[in-house]
Length: 162
Image 1 (tube, helix red, strand yellow):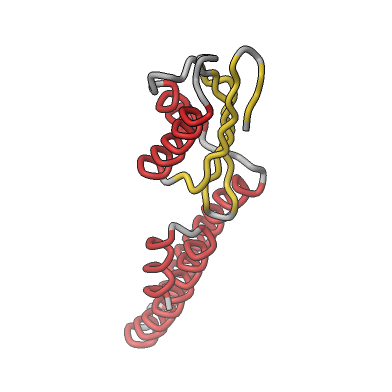
Image 2 (cartoon, helix red, strand yellow):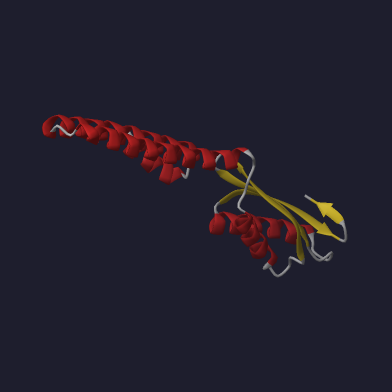
């Protein structure tokens, strides 16, 4: 079960499957450790061995649970890596027709990255050029960063177009 969850969590970059993968790995590790501990304790009459292994396994389970909680809780409070947002902003600002990135906010929708951005462009741009720019930004963000959807707002002289 662990191998299946691990494979699909990597393929889809899915936080729920990653958590399930870690959980099933911990379950498998606990079962294997229990069997080995019983065999060693009974075979070699090392009664203290069970206590040592139990403490080690308990610490491992607590550590894994803390990792799962930390990653899940950040997604629940709408946290997004500011370094990655900064990379998005610099990439969009590097386009020749973009005067300035006024606003940028990334968030997760499940495991998918969504992006809202407002940019300033020259007022001489036509609707066709603006449409092409929006398509270009969407394509760049998808290909370079895996952003599923980029909602681009355009402003020229404090007038916004969506």
